[in-house]
Length: 221
Image (cartoon, rainbow, N blue to C red; front, side, top):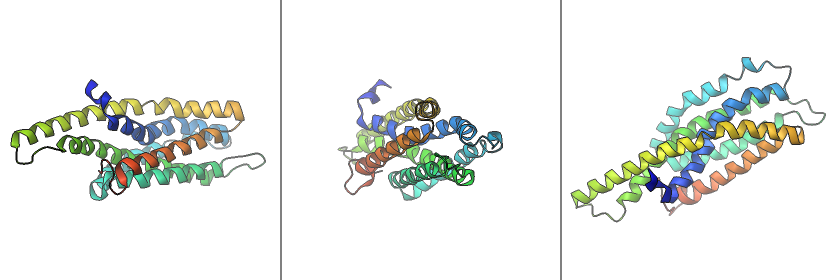
């Protein structure tokens, strides 16, 4: 597994997978806290379970969509929608004399959960394609032994990267709720945390577009 630590695309996909799978488990952990702190008249237990359910159920569709349209394309547009949804969440949160609007907040968060599930499937599809493509570059297609060796290497590195990125993304389950708590403690609202997530999704958009999604990208997938 240590072989993947020297691979640039391992670390880039760690960032992207943190943005999808990490966001999913982080939002699932922090959603009840956010409802309770920002909308005290709403019972969080009545709504908090819906987000994780939506994100989990939609994940296979994200993989299927990536198979049809390409992992990078689906992931790119998915992060764009995630960034917009985060802005929507901030709009409907209480702020100053504004008591907020729970309905809009809840809908925007469901969109976030939906996109974390779709992005989870699409990024998971990108990883094996990236490492198999990288391994096959420069290999003589007429040399059966070389092709078999390249396939083995690409599949091995892809599998190792899938495991490592999932482990790294699990930290989202800590960072997102912690960010909410820190933001509320320092500023009195979770807005700072949400704007940080927005900035992070912008970084994910740039990485996805530059390395995987644009014309003549380094590793189209």
